[in-house]
Image: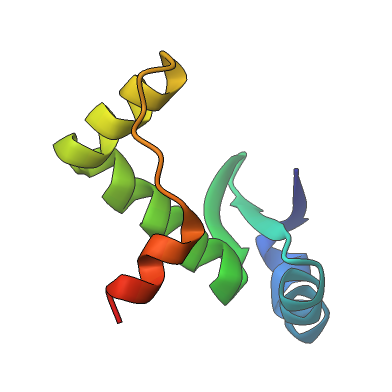
Length: 85
């Protein structure tokens, strides 16, 4: 859940907002003229969103996810990763 600051308060409290977003991995919304104008989020949250979007955009990954959810996934022992290295 995002914490919201008006644009005026955001200017006054930017260091606090930055620390809050970074420390808690939270999302800070900045509002102006009655609507949310921007968001401030931690690098970790941004990277997570980007990774999710990449997976959602990959047809092969999505097909594998659908198969796994339907109980038709292909599972390999963890030790099989040693063969890749």
